[in-house]
Amino acid sequence: MNDAQISTEAVTHDERIRLIFCLFAACVMAAALAAFAGSTLQDPDNWWQVKVGLDFLANRTFPTVDPYSHTFAGQPWIAKEWLGQVLLALAYQAGGWNGVVTLIIATISLTVFLLGWFLSTSLKPILAIALAFVVAFLIDPIYTARPHVFTLPIIVIWTAMLFRAASDERAPPWWLLVLVVLWANLHATFTLSFIIAAFAGLDLLVRTGLSKPVLLAKWIAFGLLCPLVSLIHPYGVQAILATLAVAYGNEAVSLITEWRPFDAQAYPVQEIAMLLALFGLLVSPLRIGWAKALFIVFTLHVYLAHVRFMYLFFLLVPLVIAVEVAQQYPLLSLAGWLAEKRDGLEKFVARRFYAIWAVAAVLLIGAVTAIGSAHQVAPSPKTSASGALAFAESHHLSGNVLNSYSFGGTLIFHGIKTYIDGRTDQLFLAGFTKSDDETGHSGGKLLLEAQLKKYAIGWALLSADDNRIPFFEQLGWKRAYADDYAVIYLPGA
Image (cartoon, rainbow, N blue to C red; front, side, top):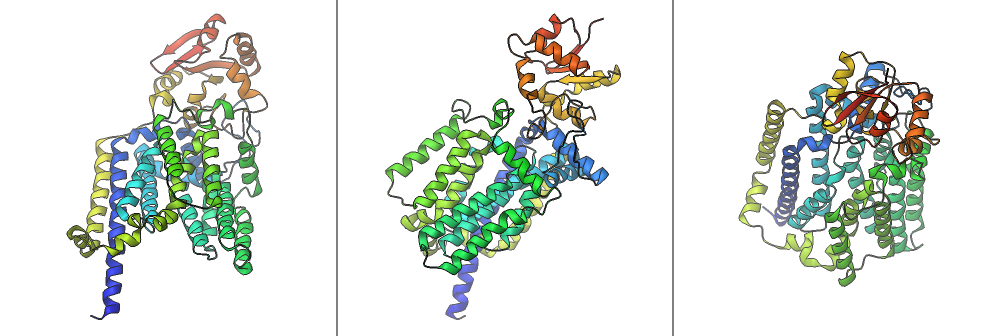
C-alpha cells in the first residue's frame, strides 16, 4: 500500500469516527426525548396544526379564508405553514399522536447529528458532541409538535454552509436555495434565511473588502435570489406579508407567552448559559471580527425580545464562531485531534463502521416500535378538555362557544368552531384579542356580557383557572360540568 492509499484510508477512518460520534449523539438525544415523549404535546397549538394538515390531505385545497372560528369565519386566512402541517398530519395518520411525537423526536435528533457534524469540521469531535448536547438541552423549551421544529435541521445546514463559504472566501452553494423553498413552505421563519445570508455576506466583505468583485457579485446575486425563490409557495407573496405582519407586532404578541421578552426567572438555566458565554467572550483573547460579533448581538436581541427565538442564539452562535475557536485554540481543533494517534476504541469504530450503523438502526427501530406499542402518548389534559368535550357531545350542546385560549386547538381538532385560538398571527385582531384579555381583568364583567351578546354565545368552555369564571356566575350562568382542567357554563334559565 503506497503513501497516498494510506493517507486516504486514514482520512476515511477519521471521518467515520466523526460520523459515529454524531450518530451516538443523535441516538442519545432520541432516547432522552423518548423517555419524556409526552412533553412535546403540551402546546394547545399541537391540535390545530395537525387538523389543518389533515384537512389539506382530505380536501387537497389551500384555504384562503378562516374555516375554523365563528368569530372570524370567512375572514382572510392562509395556511402559510402548510407543508409542516401536512408532515404532522401524515405522522398522525401513520401512528396517531405516537407517530407525531416520533417524527418530532427524529427531527430534533437529526438536528443534533447535523450540529455535531458541522461543529466537528472545526472542533475536536468529543468537544463538538458535548457542545451539541449542551445546545440541545438549552433549547429544550421549543421542542413541541409544531412546524417550526422541521426548520431546525435546515437552519443548521444553512448557517454552517454560508458562514463556512464566507470563511473560505468562496461563493455560496447555489443548491442552498432549495432549502429556502422548503423552509418557506414549512414555517413562517423562512425570512430569517435572508438575514443569515446577509450576515454571512457581510463577514465575507470584512474578509475580502472589494478585492474580489466577482465573488461579491455572486453573493449579492445569491442574496437577491433568496426572497425570490421563497415565492415558490402556494400563497406567493402573501406568505411573506403575513410573516412580516407578525414580526412588526400585533395586539396579540404581548399576550402570548412565547412572544414575550426573555424572563430570567422563567429560564434560569438559559440565563446562566448566556452570562457564562458573555463572561468567556470578555475574558478570552478570542477574536471573531465585527461582522460575526454583530450577528451574535442580533441573535441575542431577537431572543431577549421574543423568548421563542432562543434557538437562534444557542444553536447558531457556536456554528458561527467554531472556526475562530479552532484557529486560535489549536488544542480544541479538529486539526489537533487529527494529529493525535487513534486509540483502540476509535480504531474499532472505524473498522466496524457499517456494522455499528446497522446495529444502531435496528436498535432505534426496535426502540420506537417498543415505545409505540407499550405506551400511547397524548396531548396534555390542560389543552385537550377531553372530559368536557365528551360531556358537550353527550348533552348535545349547541350554539357558539366561548372558549379559553388554551382550548382553541382541541376545538378545531374536534370540528367545533372556536371563539379564539392560536392563529393570532392573522386572526382575532382589530381589538378582539385585547378585549378578550380585558374580560378576565377587574371590571371585565360588563365587557364579557357584551361579548356574549355580540357573538350569540350558547355555552362556554373555560380552563379551570380562567379569571372570567366569577363573572359567568355573577351573570347568572350555571356550571354544567367541571373537572381538574375544564369547566362548562350554560346560560341560566
